[in-house]
Length: 193
Image (tube, rainbow, N blue to C red):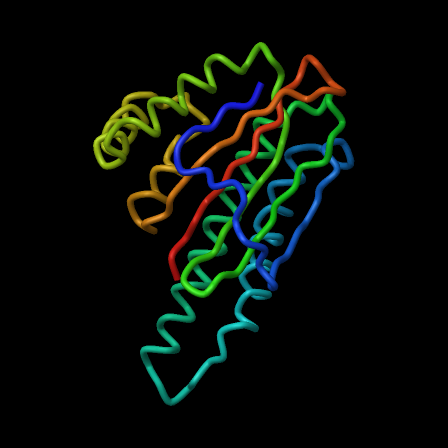
């Protein structure tokens, strides 16, 4: 079983510049991983900046570099948080994040696993996210968050990427042949630069 939602592009040409980071799902408790997510996202942003020389005499160049760095840090952090939060540790499969650099855009891909019993609600969520207007969904989610003071999740990360960063998002869900009770989730974000 393989299912695609949104703008998930398979067969992209290989990027000569990429970075891949893997995380063991059971090495440290989730609460401690939150700090690592931010550090990893900032590391990815700092790493990427080596490919964008800073021309201190050109204010537009400096501003663009700062925007790209901030965008990379935000997107990577959101992707890592979601992958960590929704990963099923029982699968004991590493969580991964990859960043690929192309001329006009960046591609992020995270991988994690979910249990089959969480698949249908996740598919319903992805169907809604990819078929409805992201601005309307964003406003709807803001209203929902304002009314639900007990919620620990904002639900705004993917919507912010689409609305504020002009990102294209896609997901690939694949059955894991070695672990029949789990599904591998690959989330792709294409970010213009």
